[in-house]
Image 1 (tube, rainbow, N blue to C red):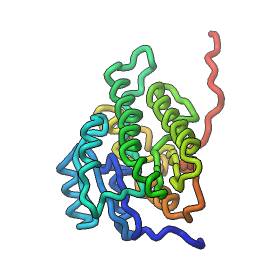
Image 2: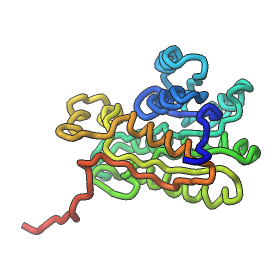
Image 3: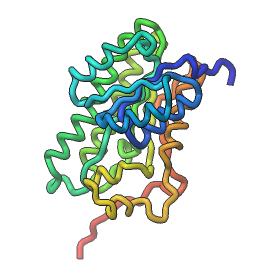
Image 4: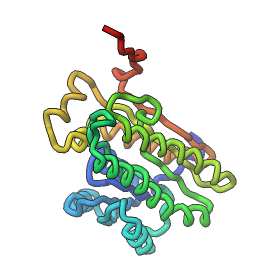
Amino acid sequence: MRSSIDPKSLTVLVTGATSGFGAAVCRRFIQAGAKVIATGRRADRLRALRKELGARCRIAAFDVRERRHVEAALGSLPKAFAKINVVVANAGLALGLGPAHEASLDDWDTMVATNINGLLYTVRAVLPGMVARDEGHVILLGSTAADYPYPGGNVYGATKAFVKQFGLNLRADLLGANVRVTSVEPGLAETEFSLVRFHGDAAQAAAPYQGIDALSADDVAETIYWSATLPRRVNVNRLQVMPVMQAFGPFAFKRRA
């Protein structure tokens, strides 16, 4: 496509880069020649990723839920990595699948702190620089759960609905600036997501994927890469991606006996 962005011109910040979508995004952009700042809580995994990807990958270990840590880490980047022009706010999780009246409040707090607060801290830390330079792209990791509720998805789905609306509101605020905003919203994808949701129970974690050719982390990374390298005049507001064998169920009814 005419005037597509040269990936070698990109410095990409990726949160939640220690597994799943985040690690795959780092690999995809490095493969294309970009510079990447890979962040996450697990320093050992970040070191392994840097060893794999080389000098164009810088790592920073911090928890996105801690605003001061986010600000300190991103405020002290060396000159070669300081001008972030793509942020992939990927860090997030689901915990539990029980009904709201039985769910763990600790799980709810963790999801809100990570999926909402952590995303806000990340975006706010890089957005002023993008606006000042009149160039950038904010990519938010949402979910089809933002639009389509399912039993047990209570707070997780609500946090992703926030992500969707925050992205749209950013578009309104940034009108006139050459800063793009995209919400990428995957459906069923086979990563560590389910293992985290079920607190490490491997049998429960495997069940949602049985008999389904689910999305892979690489599928989602390719979608993110595509949106980031389109011509600068193009803004993809929202992008839902689902496996072919996932669709929309009928309305649910609870009939009287």
